[in-house]
Image (cartoon, rainbow, N blue to C red; front, side, top):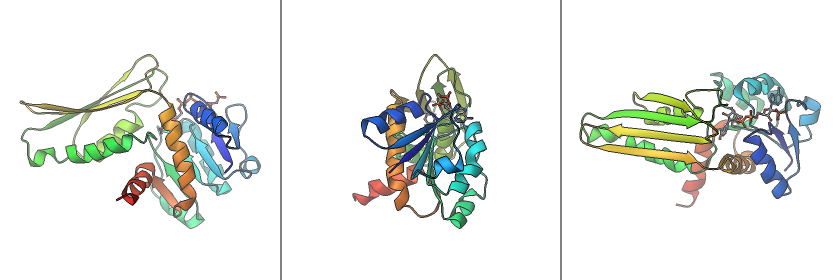
Length: 224
Ligand SMILES: NC(=O)c1ccc[n+]([C@@H]2O[C@H](COP(=O)([O-])OP(=O)(O)OC[C@H]3O[C@@H](n4cnc5c(N)ncnc54)[C@H](OP(=O)(O)O)[C@@H]3O)[C@@H](O)[C@H]2O)c1
């Protein structure tokens, strides 16, 4: 498997470390070495940790290349017909706002938390996310995913402090009790490991746009 790595910044740089450590053939594309159709064609999978804006600029090129794409770029919306488009082209893409495999455990916890009001009265939810000062989007893509999983009204607050990798907290509060789910990323390696996990799985998928959490979920259920 030869990887085309788009972006070698704070997160892409950790993917690069894993590729080197595991002797996985790769090419790095960045702000000085832009990908072209010709250059991309020599690869089996693309992994992108570009910002959402830059990634959007390359989407047509990536579609044209027909190479499977694993993308962690946030701060962008997917066109509503994108999954259909990929299916027509026979292309396979995986995306995640958070490639941490541990985040999938949190997903299950939030699915339980969302049912709280079936047994508890006066439930109110709130969320807070903290990231480094260079993060472009707020609220974070992960916070928006948590909100989607929760499927309730929730006020999200964002803080930008130092070089914090990522802290997300969801609080359930009633006048008489409080429950908190907290995930803290301690090392960007968790995103790199998840992206490589996705790159290894992508050829086994059917064409279309796949959410990483669904890919992992399938893997978890295999063991049951
Ligand atoms: N899904 C997840 O699990 C996850 C986790 C963490 C972050 N993210 C997201 O990943 C994205 C990147 O975050 P980051 O903190 O790693 O960013 P970053 O440190 O700013 O790195 C951005 C990379 O993009 C490259 N770049 C900029 N313009 C380019 C262009 N026109 N063509 C090609 N490459 C270009 C830069 O090249 P140079 O090296 O030459 O400057 C750099 O390597 C963000 O959207 C972030 O939210 C996702």
